[in-house]
Image (cartoon, rainbow over all chains, first blue to last red; front, side, top):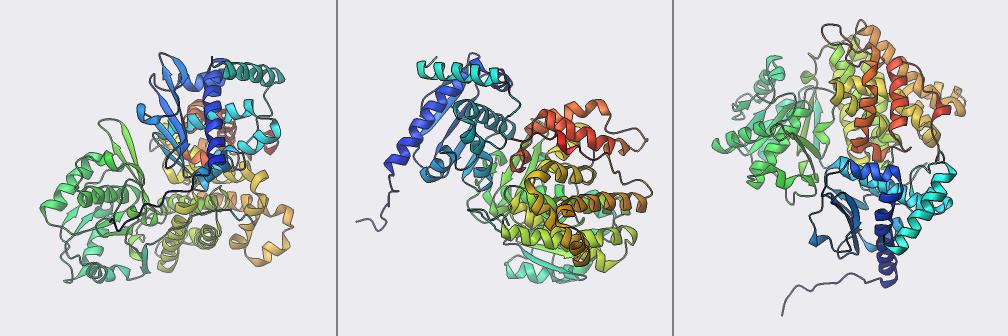
Length: 176
Length: 415
């Protein structure tokens, strides 16, 4: 008999499901935003051709993986081990992921509170954070997006907000 | 008061401070079972006679004749590997780093290689890659500025591959920091001024940036009090040994604060200016500090106002209306820069258009400001700044800092 007993972490199925669905939807939304929004496209254009990043929670996920393939940005599913990842944003637990992804804490504040670990080249990681912020502004109503990002972009035109939102939601739902 | 829901704080460095603290080194090494240290330094420190002081302080109590003084101004992977080889060939069992930031970083890199028997230092880069304690490391800072003697990070450059490797781990904290007034006594007023402003920028940014917490705050406030009071004194009277020791302690306190609370826009734009134009880090910090405060004022007015008490004292704090305290802090820092400018005969720059090289040519031409603003987008310090920054924000702040005019706070974008 082993004297060491593994104590599995609590499963927290509801929080895990929320985080999983959020990451799946956001992953597809990033793919969509790279086609719809000029700023997101420019950020990806400045990254290497095979650039791949993952966002998810420790120790067992869920994760989302996004990559540039032949110049196009693709949502690559939820298994980072299948890819060479340049930047990994790892949230320390499902509870912490729920805090961040339910917009009770911004990405910057989560980093400051040691809940989000960033592995990879800093300039790439900063580009990923800027992309995530822009996508959150498109996906969320202003009052919630204001909690998710450091500064809500009030200077965006109504056309950019509305057109971008329609384009990103449509492409995310259709997966194109 | 801003009380974070969660925070972490760690400083397990033993700090030994005094006018004769160096004499304690043999005993400190013996406590750790070490008797054959490798002394790592640079040529500037050695030629200033500081290694002679360190050696003399050991008398016959320590076999400390192995001195490597070839650390370049920028840490270098090749030198790290050379020194690690020297360490192993001579059966050393500890490292004494005597110098500034580059020497400390190099010593930390050497310590990783010799402790982990590493072939490839890159395997240990990033945060949390080190899993066990390293060999004993004693840090002896020769400037009162960087705070590297109490920080858990190191940056080593691979000049051949054009890579900058960053390492972060509690195991990189030196075991002991020895703060001795003799180590900074020969620093000329200009270097004293710029390194002192670097330390002040650590203390101030740590007090208002996103990772601030009550423990880092306590260190920040103590650091601001000491540095603000003693910096002009020591710039004017370089041989004032009490003021020298106070500055060393102030910079150490500031190092503990920012190592646990991080820094923001001042370092963000300062790093970018340094890398684009080659301006010394301390000068960038001195120039940018008032602008960092102004830029973040609408989000951190209460915290910034709180700095007035350690800077100006109780009487001035009380007679300044609460709504004016934060602005007063900014004006006192501008005045400190102006005083240091006077003390150094105009050599301590107050804004970027004043920064010149040895031939008197401007180091920061106005036309490079867009390049600096873009470079700053790749610097990690922006994450911890309370207000968001983008290219236009960076450029706006840089233009004001170049001209030497206060920031027009109505132009700062708000969410």
